Length: 220
Image (cartoon, rainbow, N blue to C red; front, side, top):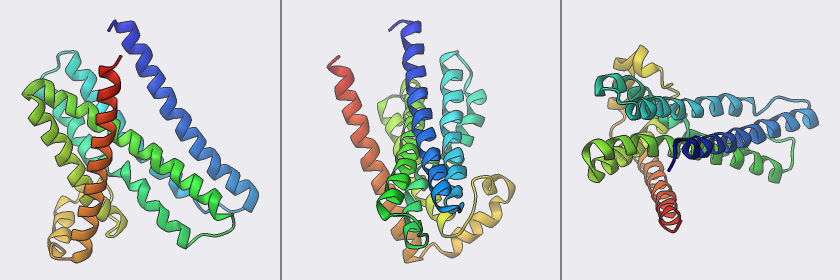
């Protein structure tokens, strides 16, 4: 694949993600215009956070392709892992259907699905980029270990954000408090159940998407 072709594919992927994001934000704006209320504006902020792991993964991936040394890749990779749960976190915003009215349910379902789908794709693309780095440096097994490990930790991260209301930057600002809060709930059925359920869903969804992409690329 030539460099110009790879660059064109990257821009097409970026434009697709940007268009999906714009569509999602547009639905929130339409809802505001029709109801006169800003009730789902938090989705826009959550979507912005979902872009961060994608951005950090891209920085790490480009740094690796330019021949960057491993220590230089550790910071963007660490930031990617810390912010990764923000991407699939958008799936949990479906719970807002129980709390917010004012529009037909079908409209809110479409809006929430648009945000959730965009967040998942942003997260999965970022995982794929980091997995590619690990695979090229240490082999396929290491690549999958990184991918599955990050998705498993994302399940826990989603619990921390949705239930305990911790943010990604709290890991850097007050890591002791975050870890202590988790330690107190290690035997909590809600922590275990929600974390495992989200991790299993993300793993299956990512593996499915990865498989289909692999088949499609092999047939080209």
